[in-house]
Length: 404
Ligand code: SF4
Image 1: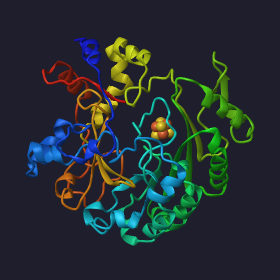
Image 2: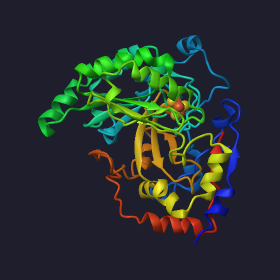
Image 3: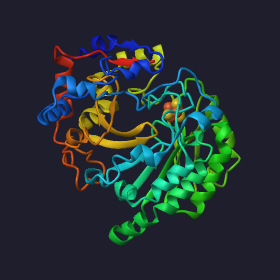
Image 4: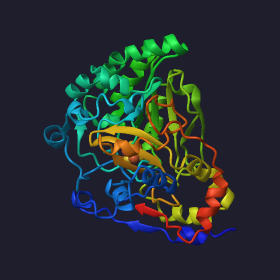
């Protein structure tokens, strides 16, 4: 049945509301909605609809979005967060052992790509270097990290932090024990994966990461190019990359009709990659700002195209949970779909109290299963096609919502 056109034409827009008011009252509607599987599990742990809603589910892992971009000076004086203090009530909780593999240094991103696949807000807080250093020296925190890797860069941009390179170096040193353990057990390195979105102004930072990657096989660097409607950043990257032909040169595939280089993804360094998400590529089912043309294209897509584009992935992971750390807190993140929930992910801050229920959500099966997580490993035994069909035919289907 092909009613997706009608479904997507119901797209509604939620304007961000001002400042703290948006999130400070739990009775104000949340900006994300949990998938039905997760609601069932939380009800099974004794929560009712109101209790689940009042946890506060956010489409974007940011509690207080700033009205405007804060200056570096304001962030440095008012936005510094003590990482140890933030996590103090959770450090040592056995349920969180080996759960964490993704973190950001700030609670938003200052890059302002016009299509943001992470729905990022502007940054209002950042971890201080000194507190991160104390946190990574704490064995209780090291126990919280997953045994194979730690990713820095999700809905925040690492280069926004002026001490970013020092922090990466510090983390590489502080996590050596995890590396030794993995080498002993699996013969593989524990990796520190850094994702950064290229800008002309961050070239010096990227140069520093590349230099570090040359001597540090544990470091994996992914340089992402934005999905912007205008190609100016990509053009600047082409110039930058061509000036470093020893690293990037052999992988300049060809120039497209716009005169831009299509990058093959690899570089001469095994641990430095380019993620070339050009706006003509079909990666637009999530994200904050979609142009009318993009929305029209989604509406006009054939079902098969939607299915293979992201629906299979979305429905296949629906209800799977994992944790994520940024300066607003340790978050529980649950995968949803753009069809039943208005973004692909729903976030709530973990507390020692709500962990009693949240830890029963199944942990995402793509990652090592935490040994004490009561929800255990998620099982991918759903038929994404069946779920999708149910969603497209049910009376309770909701319009896709874009947060602006
Ligand atoms: S796509 Fe990445 S770099 Fe761009 S605004 Fe979003 S989080 Fe920031």
